[in-house]
Length: 332
Image 1: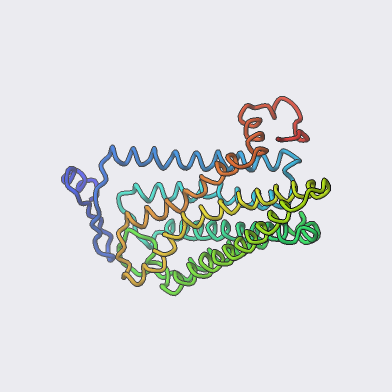
Image 2 (image 1 turned 60 degrees about the vertical axis):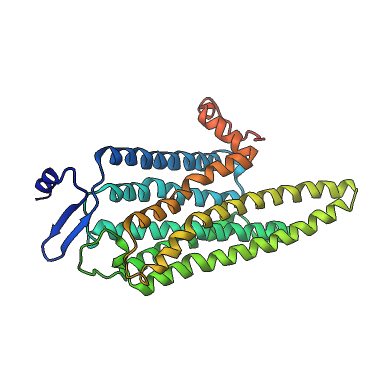
């Protein structure tokens, strides 16, 4: 039936999808050339996301200099970003270019569960990183006792467990509304949309902003203290403090970009029930892609701010690590 409609409506601006018992959807036809360009654009984002985060993962796993609690948390973040590029983005790319699909489709629920789990994983990783930076800058004498490899491992385990349970739970609570639609959001209770947005995004986001504000104030006091002393021994400690502040600044930028990318999506998520689920599909798709494109940006941020990541990336891309054992190499 659909193929016949396509032949007769080839140059019209609607496509009718009919499923027995669910009614009819009328959605805009996307011209073939536009769909090809969209596939190229979305595919490029997928490739950049996967390759960039593979570089981060390989760097941290291979080079022993990068085996630190902070970098293990960055590794966990890179894994979630990699999964976004390998799993979530292809799903979204397919749904953005499909002719017709329905909310009761199991793929829709799978996509929702994966997207929610990976997004929550990313923000929980960022929460763990903010706690790590708090101890590194605000309580440097207690840092090594409070944050070590064992503690980082526990953080990562709890992070992924909570993310999987919340993503699955929110999706299980979804209702099949029994109607044709071009958005997945109508399969979820309005209260679930609000709870997921508030507790999985806005509450942790506010907590992270508070932590980084505290870190910024402490770093400012440390900088003024360093300027008022000339002792050589203090200079050595000042150099370490400066490095910690630089790392904190970089990770704060990572968090800031994350919030910029995902805040419009979660605001829309909360407002969807108030709008009677009538938000245009292109708006939903644009906000979703804006959020998930964040997974592509983090490796570029690391490469821009961290000299040791740049050195590691160069050695991996050039294939130097395959020509000998460079695991103990001292990165810049």
